[in-house]
Length: 132
Image (cartoon, rainbow, N blue to C red; front, side, top):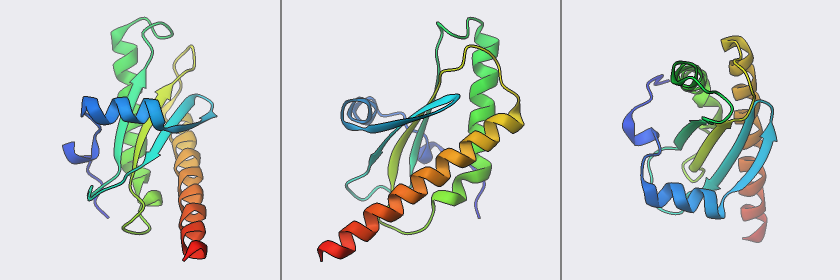
């Protein structure tokens, strides 16, 4: 398993970000709001975006701290999502809690989010197979 988080796995295209927020589905798992959109095309990997509200977390140092922790938790647990080739997604993790959380809490929630996304991905794959 490759535990890196290269640029091709980070969501940085303004066009894709707009599409994700316009057309994506979302769910809430405290302290995250997760927005996701299945990819249509030949993208090689899931692409992820991490966001922390300036309104909720005032200091840039704390926002950067949370984004680093979120990236680390995702990087260590992204293997949960890797099950097949036609299951790539755009994913946005939006931190909505008013204060700082410790890494172990963030990591456990990221694991739950990834498990939920993997379950939905499996359900979508089963629906596609039934249609054939």
